[in-house]
Amino acid sequence: MKKLFTVLAAVILTASVFAQSPDKMSYQAVIRNLSNNLVTSTAVGMQISILQGSTSGTAVYVETQTPTTNANGLISIEIGAGTVQSGDFTTIDWANGPYFIKTETDIAGGTNYTITGTSQLLSVPYALHAKTAETVTGGGGFTHYVGELYGGGIIVSVWKESSVEHGLIASLTDVSSGAQWSSITETLIGATAQSPFDGQANTIAIVAQGDVSGAAYLCDNYSSGGFNDWYLPAAWELNQCYNASLVVNTILGATDGFQFAYYWSSTESSNNYAWIQNFYYGTSNYGTKGITYRVHAVRRF
Image (cartoon, rainbow, N blue to C red):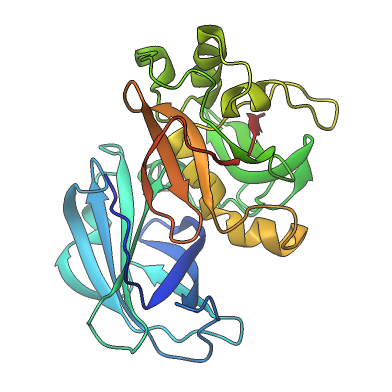
């Protein structure tokens, strides 16, 4: 379980992570200070770890870098090209996942890392494992790309399964600025609502339990662009939304897109808890089902 931090020197917003070559991955992040102001034209210290199995799993590779933010607070690095602390990036068995990228940052440029963020890799390891250079920005034979207005919303992730292109589409706006996870808040659903990646199955199970006003119900009844197969994203799908949030909000503006707030996932944790994600810091935790958080709908193609 990822931990929430009460004292932070800055905020990292993950923009995108995609396969650049078999031996490197491009990574971008926007660096902000505690006042939510961009940290511009500044050298920052970073330690990047590839974790295996979970957000607290074994670090199979660790490196450090000292990138400089641009005028928009953006850093762009290639993971695999830094100063190696442990492991060998080229020998990672990407098929033996899941894998997570953990970033630790010191905005003073040193090694006093006070900011930590962890994001899961989904399609990236498989692209590397297959030794392809396909990206999520339209190259490598992809028709669609992150940030494309398509299918009633905006694309936040694309991938291929057996050479067939698929993608995750997010609604253009929040479905709700504050809703409970479900109208039933203290009764366990179980395995049918606990998938970390299949939000549609989770949503079906939540609604079937009798939810008539919660986050899952709102997404299940949402319609946009002539599509009505929207659902509440699972924890990993919600993380894909977070990973694309910089691109999405750059295109849609501050009013639409994603807000700096907590969002519900459809992944149940226990009888009265379900997983949430913080769109300030990228951290995940579990929230009480009866508390209200923001809601965003997704669908797949």
